[in-house]
Length: 347
Image 1 (cartoon, helix red, strand yellow):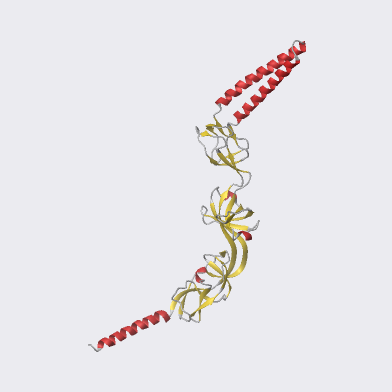
Image 2: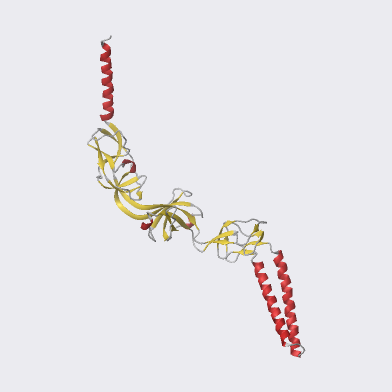
């Protein structure tokens, strides 16, 4: 028995060594695919928010308490349409008082004018009563204008997108009660990284997606680029025109791809196959690491500009077990028809 132990140990070690060699050098099964031709879209990615092209805050010129709300959020209004009324009892009384004083001033002026014609009153008395009547009229007009300010009206035709007031609430001078979207369709305001802004041009096509509208994409174009960037966020604000603005609502968050260039017929492989500027290919049943030059890359697809042929079998998910020259058995993978859409990838 003592003589058999060394033999058993040698056999076990040999078996372990053989298993290790098989694991390192034996054939493995790999998922492969062939490169395919498709569009490679070079784009600049940005996130933005849907906003009105023109948004007008509507605030009172005179402080007061809201006594009536005549419209609400989402309502379409006409130019000059009343939106809310503020408490105006004091001003109503003031208008009545000044109207009475104006009537008396005019009556006094007419009486003095008749006396002047009869020669029993001086011309200076007529001038004084005329000035009194004109001053009374001016005071009445001013009071009527102040009373009119207690009614908030729409400065233009549009849609009420926000209301910040309730009946009984006291509103200070200049505090907006309504926000009105008017005069133009909705647009998107997006932030673009300062490194990408030199490539942005007015009129550049844009493809947009909103999480609130899943499964749909929308067209647009670059409308304007603000000349001053944000030095903290290191971004520039870019405004985008929407081809179908009625599909969106104010405040929606959107993802935007600003299309720089589209190359049709580009050679594409799954992005998971590319690592460290190279891919693994299966040729004559053995693995080989192939250096490639890449172009546009996205999460799904990467453009191959050089180093790969259309008929090569590319390993979709390479791992650390792959070795140069190792035997492998292929397993076909489903191809993705999605185009590569992203910024250029380095070689």
